[in-house]
Image 1 (tube, rainbow, N blue to C red):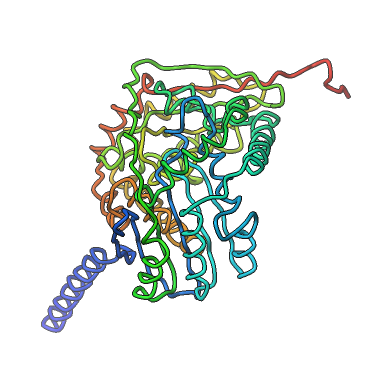
Image 2 (image 1 turned 120 degrees about the vertical axis):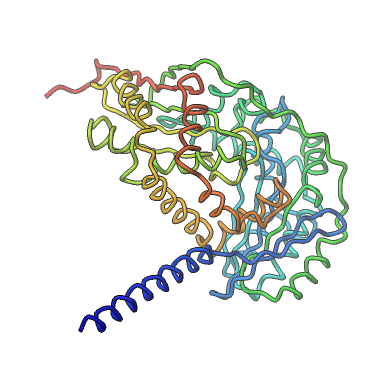
Length: 463
């Protein structure tokens, strides 16, 4: 009987060791791997192919290495204005024909201007992939630049500014406002949506020069994601993009930010707001450093999800607000930018709550943050980050994947970085996070912006 028990115990421990070994092996190989094939055309165009045959669709994404940050100093909002111009017609596709071509073939399209790039994409049935490559090459080759198109789009963009910012409660708060308050370098601190006078002053020569300078193949990345034959797509890309001439690119301006040594505090009056609001921003560590990845996990711990520390304190415990929003890079994600960046969170709160009460609650969380950072909390943050990353990669038929591939190609010349992100976050230790808190989440590295509602009490109805 004792011998049988001993044998059973041996078998049990052997089974546990095998299961442990199997789990460790599975953990080491379970990281999601994105197919990446990267090459460059002779004219400098960066090309990334990433196959995914889970659905008969394909994405064409073209990213140009020009965004808000380095637009001309006397032409604020010009990068965004030019994004609109790219839909106004090209050599073979007149006005609205590009949009109609995509939509009539069952696809969707859009474009956007961010801090460090302007992008355009189409999601179409896979058998229409060649058509989309031809269309994108056609407008990279040359735009239909006319005074009529320019005047029309100046009006569209100015109306967009009026609707989204000037005539909107909390307009521009904090995504447009905070960079202007927190940063010192003009490239990072100007009104990138555009001053109305600057938008009006743009002329045809400006548009032509901007296109010639920044919309060249050697300043762009092209990603194709979806269901396709790689060899066939390579042939199409060479055929349609290969003979577009490259350009002499200007020197990159200095976009660095000085180290912040004092806390900044600002109040913005808003006659359209009915509640006060507050935004708190900290300057980020440099991209791709260990501290950068540590800040990514701190973001998960502090503001992402119902169990985040700031939400627990400000919403559940104190009841100052119903929601806390935040993150790294309000105009994208923590991966798709190049220059200096802010980690930020914001909230609205009731009129009978003071900003001092809100900031006291914020400080109580941050002052005790190190004690909350343990191996267990870091592991939980890693799970949340991994989930967020996988959502990003799989969203919109793979558009998130195309976004990261183009961003890493433009900024790092290495789209394969997409497959190293999870491992970089796994290197983050509680000790590294503690050091990052000391270096970056210090009061002297933050900017606080308060929206002050200009309430007219005389117009308040009484019951």
